[in-house]
Length: 288
Image 1 (tube, one colour):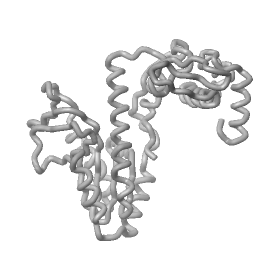
Image 2: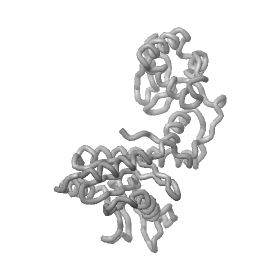
Image 3: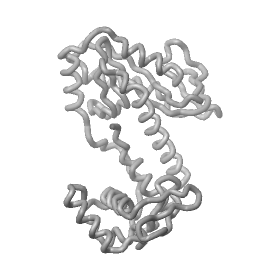
């Protein structure tokens, strides 16, 4: 199960409760799109690679920090994959990466090269060839300037690539397992370079917001809430309290989350007794 980036988790909490700048909005959409692309890649690849060891979101720190979206340890070689969810037309020219308006963008192939260099440092004691590729998950993506040598797997080529890797007739050895163990032990659980979006808690809007359309939800009955007429999403009080607890624990830390804070966070749509009862039941079942 791929873990959602902390800044994306934060932005999803903040988005219905504060106004984003244009830059923050773009960053939010890019993070969301990127994560969706990574999850789609997992679904299309991981179930069919029983003959391989797959490590997702591997973070390593050598000379510099690097994050590998997907590492496939196959019997014959190592596949280092960077997942992108680009849509539309792009141009690759003179080792530069442009969108259709000829506005320069971060070069994913340069990033791929640097990541491979970092991985090779970690694999200095192992003798496996590394095959690095950018994988694009959006069917609308098209890039001018690519050649047969461009390290790129487009969406339409992914099924063929997975079939090729899954068809490796060799078997994994103890050396493959040792490499996987070493990389997992070297994994950095915290990305100290990740910059979280700033916010002021006291200025965030209170209330219950739909997880689908982000509209404010109104009380329907004593037991349920109804979303805006836009999507008709209904959620129980228990789920509202659970979501509020998770959001506030993320924003403030568990020690700061008191019953009154939860009640205010939901716009006073949940009474104190319901919150206390649900928290008590959660404690009994091991879910605070």
